[in-house]
Image (cartoon, rainbow, N blue to C red):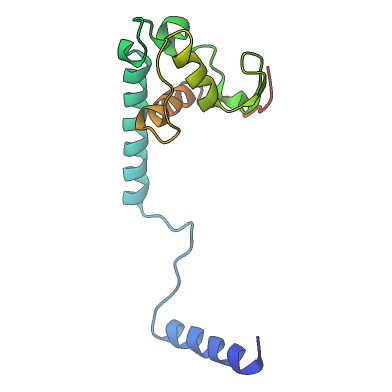
Length: 137
């Protein structure tokens, strides 16, 4: 950047500053923002609990909660990790789809499917406060 360009940038910034226009910081959230986001998250958790107990997720009447009541033994804090059933390092979403396709005999969910997001929110919420431990078995 040449001296003329630097000078113009400084003058533009000074003009905006003097006019009372300050760039927003990425961490400047309003109380309303935080409340809205928390409410949306809790709605996803609630939906996840519903999906976790929905026999329509599969084709044989089995639900996630039969093997994992209250998301027990799901350990979201350990993903990604090597998953023996898949033969590779996998994400939690991949393991959720494994369970949907196998024990539940259903179709896998797309990663951006609202049900997939809700299941992950529910499972993670149930383990709130547990330290992250990626790769742990």
